[in-house]
Image 1: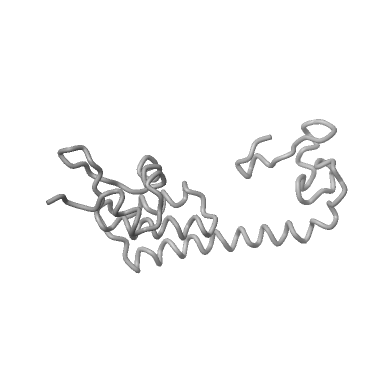
Image 2: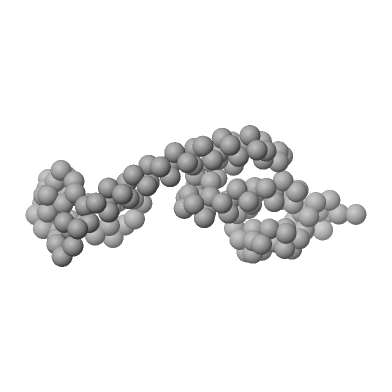
Length: 151
């Protein structure tokens, strides 16, 4: 009798594609052990971890933050309500900060439409406090490097 659940069983139970399971495993979000025949087997706690991953992704939590939250849990531990409470509290605070930032951006959007420059000294969206002025004149950026994007 094989120990643990196969990748197909986990995929069927969780609704997560096999390719996604392999990806999550490669990123250290979930763990499998191997049978003597080198087949992956997952413990049942992976189902709860996958639930956390899917909720985090639905909330827009970056995969790196999800990985950090899961890394704080013991590897062979099924996440409990108490574990989820800690994770949800941290993610809730991050979401509150993101909501505040998006509301601020929305409030400044009307003054930006039609500008096209993106480096005006008075643009509160893309160049608050003329932080780009020291880098020279003209448009200095299209995407904000602080957001993890690059031109």
